Every structure is written in structure tokens, then in C-alpha cells.
Image (cartoon, rainbow, N blue to C red; front, side):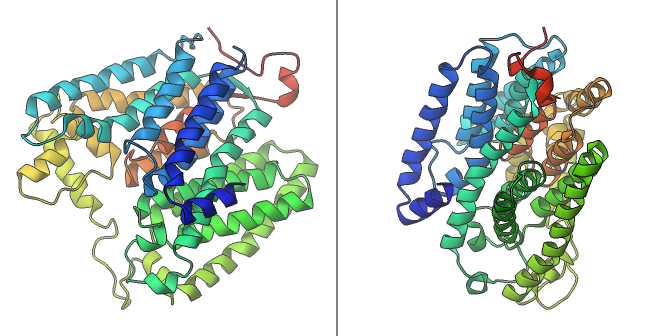
Length: 441
């Protein structure tokens, strides 16, 4: 069905808006009609689907606001917060949300003539706020493994639609080769960084389902084909960050899965792992052939002629240093929401938004950024000390940290995946005769 959705959106682009609205209504109906005990699960599924669909909806102009999916994730989380209790150990995330507020005041005071306050603030704060409300609501929520894997399925489905759309939008990468820079044409005409990040997330979720939710040969074949397709489209965006992060996530996940598995399960894991090890080089060789070897030069940080590029970070280091200058000039309160970009405009530099969330926090939130980073970094690790059953914890926390360092929080994925790492995943058998999801008071 979701392959068909990708086809339909490619043929009749305007239907993307209809699908977007229908998706919102569908999940709102499910959330508001769910029993109290099942509502958290419905919220998780709704958010998972929207996060997976965000970039597809953006590239097809389906959303009415650029940050529309982040607003929806916040809305879904708020419906849960007002109808159920939250863990009393989640209060640091409330403090985190409060600490974001001063940057809005500073932004209002420093707003340049002609700037749009709403879009300026939404662009840089919708991601952090999305993370805050998601973490506040999901912290220590109990969820059985089968439901957690269902959330990964919901996350994967729209990514499959996007992959289908990309194949139809640009069937042959050879037609749009233009050196070793990130390729917009191969990314559906949209930002390769965001597309690769979401496709990389799809690689991870499909790998999880291949190892944990493919009991039959047919499902193994299906998930393998989908994994190959998503991986190929991710690689040919020529955006490295999302793909390298996905590979790291998969490696960490497999390590913890193997450690926690029975002897029989370890045999199945080794078989599936060998399959991936075999397919990986084949995908790479095919991609290299389709790109006339340019993809190898891209990952070797070379231009089309094979000369090594001076800046492996493709301009990000310059932006990072520029952000730090904003912090040193305003170390107490920072330069305000989106102030770092405003400073670059004021100095006659390129209008470039930050790609690094840490440097952006320091620049725009000043000294409050240190407290924010301490909360975001240490709270999950302290929680992990008492609850070490989540085999996805380090993979998901790693996705958040790596993504905010190469793509900031331009999409909802890093904030939402961060919050998923805070779930209390239970063995399916342990929650029989209990509510599928509950919250500690």
C-alpha cells in the first residue's frame, strides 16, 4: 500500500496534501478514541508515522507550515500530557523546556526589520521543543517489545513511500551526476541532508525488523529487498552523514541484540548478519557503477577529479566557529532564537543556518546552553543505570547525538528518537493481563 502511495504522489502531486490531512485526521481519531491504557501507544504510533513521513511531506509541499510535522508531534504529546500522569523523574525535561524561553525574549528584542518572528523562532526551536515534550511524556513509559517494534513499522512505512517516490522522481542517477557534492536531484529536489538522515533511519528500522520481526522466509526476503532499496537511495543522495550514522546504529544494535539473545537466536542473528555482510559490498559496487565511481570519491572526500577537498565538513566548521563568536559576544543570554543566522546576515555573510545544534545552543542560549546540554546528555545515562533492558538505547541516543552534530534539529526525527530511548521496554510475557502501556507516578 505504501509503495502505491509513493506512486500516486509522484503521478498526482497535489494528492500529497490530501494524504497529509487524512493522516492527521486518522491518527487524531485513533488517539481520542483509544482507551486510557492504550492511548500512549496510539500517540507513539502516530508520532512514529509522522516523523517517518516528514521529509516526504516537505519535498511534496504537503504541509501548510514547514515545521508542520514537529507541531503535530508536539500536539500529539500534549494530548497525552493533559490526559495522563507523567513520571515524577521527568521533571528535568520541564526545566529544559523552561530554559529555552529566554532565547525567545532576546529574539524579540533583537528582531531585525523585515524578519518574520514566527518562522525565525519556529525554525530553531520547534525541534528542541518537540524533543522536550516527547521526553517529558515518554520518560519511563512501559511498553512491550511487540508494540515497540510496531512503532518501528509505522516509522518505516512512509519511508518506503518516499523511497518509491525517489525512484520515480529520478530513475537514473547518471542523468543528474554533477560532481561529488550532495545531489538535490537524486534527493527528490529537496535537501539531501534531510533525505539521507530519514533514509538512514529507515535502514536502521528495516534492519531491526529483519532481525527481530521476520519469522518467515518471505518476510526475510521482503525486508531485505526494502533494505536494499532504501540503502541505495540513501547512498546516492551523496550526503554522507545520515548513512554513516545508520551504519553505526545498526552495528550498536546488533551488538546488544547478540549479547541478550539465546543460543538459538544467536544462530539466526549470525545468518542474517552474514546476509547483510554479503549484500553491503554488492550495493556499494552497484552504486559505484551507477555513479561512475563518484560515490567512492565522495566518501574519500575528493572532488570529481580525485583531488582531496580542503574541508571535509563542507563548510560546517566555519558555521561552528561563527556560532561560537556569537556565544563569546553574548555569553549570558546568547544572541536569541535564530540570532546566529541574523548575525551572519548583519555581517554581510552568507545566510546559512547552523548545522550543529550544540554550537547553535551556545550561541543563541548563552550560559543556559550548558544546563540544557547537561540535562540532555546525563539524564538518559542516569536512567540507563537503573533500566538497562532497552537494547535500542545506545543506538537511538547515538542517532540523536550524531544527527544534531551534522544536521542540527531541522527535522523531528532526532528529538523523537531521543525520547524513544527513554521508554521502559518490557518483555512481552511480563505484561500479560496488564495494560500495554502505563506510567509510573
